[in-house]
Structures are given as structure tokens and as C-alpha cells.
Length: 117
Image 1 (tube, helix red, strand yellow):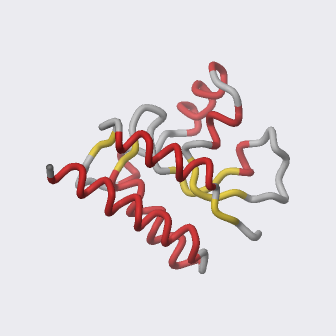
Image 2: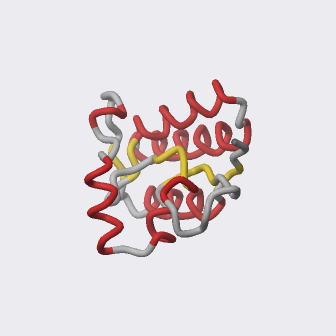
């Protein structure tokens, strides 16, 4: 599996952070990461492209209309989460996806700077 950075998701997350739609949480992403049921509920009301905006990684070998195309989630379909960005950064680093790691780190820094104001 070879993943690439999802520039649409990066721009979307930047916009949400700028608009104040983020959570500067200190918990574990497993507490906030949408479950399969929550993902399916979201998809029942939204297009797959909207679902994709919440994921920093793309697997272009998967079909455009599948959840399997999208990786490294960073929000709960309402807000960007600090712990989601941390998890994405760490997993991307472990798996060797430097572009995704760097994007997650930049978003994390932006979120933390905004939260500190």
C-alpha cells in the first residue's frame, strides 16, 4: 500500500482551525476517532468526497467511492482534534510517509498556536 498526502484534507483542516473548529484535547485519539458506525452514519448523509476531507492520506489504488481510499483521520466530522493530528503524525512517521507526517505536524503547530491565543 502506498499512500500520498491528501492536499484537500490539509486545506480543509487549515480552514477549520482558522475558523476555530478544533479541539485542543490532551486525551488519546482512540477516545475521539469516529467508530465504523459513526463513519457509516456520516456517509449516509454526506458524499465520499466530504468524508475524504477528514483524512490526511490517500490510497490511490483504492476506488474513489470507497472508505478504504482514505487514511489518517484527524477529526470527528465536526472539528479537527489535536490528538488526531498527533496520532496521524506518529503513525505516518512509523510507516515512512514523510509528507503526511510533515503536514500533520504543521497542522498541529497551527492548532496549538491558535489555541494559545
